Image: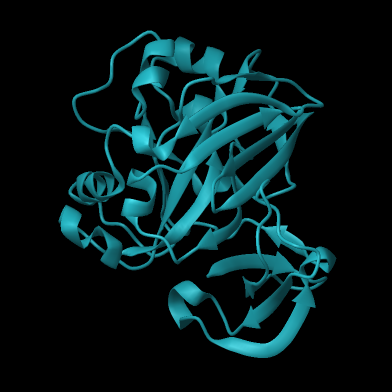
Length: 269
């Protein structure tokens, strides 16, 4: 089930998206969104009788974390190597503020403080309930679903600061979308789902979730042993190799097999 957050001209709504995805991760022309009653993270999935044509609404970030985005660095060996290092012995965690979240079609703002801003296409996990100290074998019990992320990074500031808060935390540096897919489990990604990024139509990242060093249950267990996870918290699972710079005017599309595609443009702030 694909859960979207959208605007039909008034306040944001939640809905279930129907229709098949094509080979590029885009829904069919006859797709519709069936409105839900309230936020499904808190009210459950309660469909109404009201429908909207998907093409007639504006998709928003499918979740705005009330608390936090927890991201994982160097979780693909090839990416760790391209960054000049080895894979870490345990998951490497950092935080992005919830104010960095934007949705599909939104602009990524290129800040004046940076001269090198990179794309990083990633699989994202959405947490469904409050939890702490989750054993790996119970990870599916606390996961609401999965979406697509772009962990935008001011690479020069990351290297200059020696820690990542500023480089990863600018407003608009965490695009999420286009929706949350609830009908998958960690094994679907362990078996391998393509993770691709296109920059202005050119393929620049071409990875697979089967190459995650630390799998989804391990990440949920590791993070929840450190901090309480709340409904709507997002976990970014790491990016495959091929990260690189983007400039104002560029269009970046991150797609994950079975999840769709997330597209954003870069503009000068």
